Amino acid sequence: MGLGQALTSAVSGLRVTQTALSIVSGNIANAQTPGYIAKSVTQVSAASAGTTIGVRLSAVNRTLDTFLQTQLRTENSGGTYASTLNDYYTRLQSVFGQPGAANALATTFSNFTSAAQTLSTSPDSTSARYGLLTAGQSLAQQLNGMTSNIQGLRSQAELQISDTVTQANNDMSQIASINEQLGQMNSQDATFATLEDKRDGYIDDLSNLMNITVTPTDNNKVNIFTGAGTQLVGDKAVTLKFDAQGALTPESVWSADPTKRGVGTITIDQGNNKPGIDLIANGFIKSGKLAALLQMRDTVLTQAQGQIDQIASAVASSLSDQTVQGTAVTSAGQNGFDIDLGTLQNGNTANITYTDSSGKSHNLTIMRVDDASLLPLPQTATPDANDQVVGVNFANGMPSVLTQIQNALGTSGVRFYNPSGTTLRVLDDGAGGQVRISSAAATSTISSLQSGSAQLPFFLDGSSVYTGAITNGGPQSLGLAGRIAINPALMSDPTKLIAYQATTDNADATRPNYILNQLTTAVRTFAPQAGVGSVAAPFSGTVSSYMQQMLSQQGQDASNADSLNQGQQVVVNSLQQKFNSESGVNIDTEMANLLQLQTTYSANARVMTTIKDMINTLLQM
Image 1 (cartoon, rainbow, N blue to C red):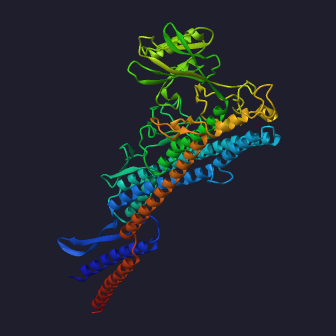
Image 2: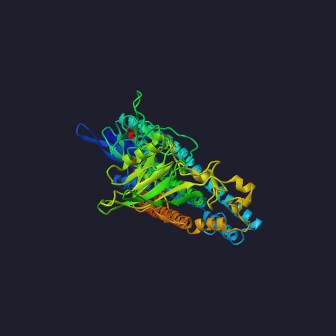
Image 3: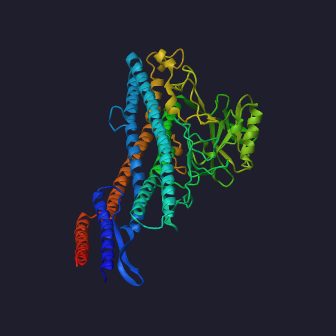
């Protein structure tokens, strides 16, 4: 080997060693930097005319376990989902209050029933009357406040979804930009490795927001898809759009129908005025922060609102609804009942039970509906999954009512007549038939404080009587907890708590006893759409038992969310530690590499010094 060749070999060694030293020092400096992947260099022999003349840098490599990285991203997505759910559940628990606390819903309702018990014992006590009104007002105000808090949480979720979509768009844009840069690079040098780190950082962040699949492609690029396979990033990044609706109300619900949707939805913008791909409607978002926020906004918090609406509906209607049993009648060999529909208001019902020719029992619910455009009613219009719901518009009088009912029942064998006025007569198919009418009753809302009955409109829907009406905006119960208020006529004249008619004695306990009974022992069926009970088996019980079931379920759900979060964080931390140990910087290893490189550098430098001395000697000869 000549001196020139030796010098070339030493210089190339120094250059490679300098690069390697730079990589090692970078590893040590970034040992605590999140997302930093340890790097190393690969060197190969440099040859000329078949003769090795030194070494050259082949590539800067990242010490990366891609399988472990994929696992970590999946679990990080689940971890962010679990932590977001847990955060919202914790805040929701504070809305309902801790069991036994003075501000808890159960405590406020208990105070109301206790005040009713006091009035039942001492109906002539002025303080007892004011005590019941004050307790009732506290209950109404607490339900109002809970509605405000729940909708506040939903509005915060809506805002966070908007911010998260913006963050996702930034991540995808950065990934696409780095894809383009890496695609134009021919050598895997330190800059190349740094760009890969940056891209991985944006991918990691995106995986925290939603479930994604990452697929490497040619030219050092990656493609990113939703879990369902819709492409988000390739050579270009898609743009997600979210039409935030601002402050939400109980009526603001998600729907695939844009005309019925009151909350924002996430779509992939396809440009050219094309309709976007709706990620929510297609169920593409199943994990990550976005999935948790959507679940809270559209399911958990919506059901929580539905539950307190059910309580508001129960306490209002249980005190104001009057059920009158039908009068047994026989006509031309047919047996049945007469019921008066004249007192029914929008949303009030008549119930008929009968047995058909096969011996099967049926429960028919006839509901007054003032808006004919809502007919026919869905069978979910009542909580009872086993009844047949028939919505009837009363605008054209009893002949039209009869026709609507008879058409709905078809060939059931039940016969309907109108003997006079607003009386509905329901009869079986006669002595030779097998259809039998078991019972009939009409339930109407009492609007007057002195109707002559114990029922009274204690609570109102704002300034209107609550009748359970079905409207174009949904059932009247929707958002009722935010509107429920004590009847101002009672506040101005508490004697009406006793005087159900003008001649009622001051110490008459009829109405106080009724109020107490309805609050404590009356059994109701609650709508399963609020999440308590099921469609096949809706929850039936007292208001208090429903509240206990609701609070127990809320507590269990919150506990499950906390357990899920704790378990998920253990998995994430374990994977992160394993990933760091395999792909992160090991200081001991790097120090050993540093010592070895220093030795190599010194050796190459000594060779150069020796060659210099030899050349000087030759020049002096």
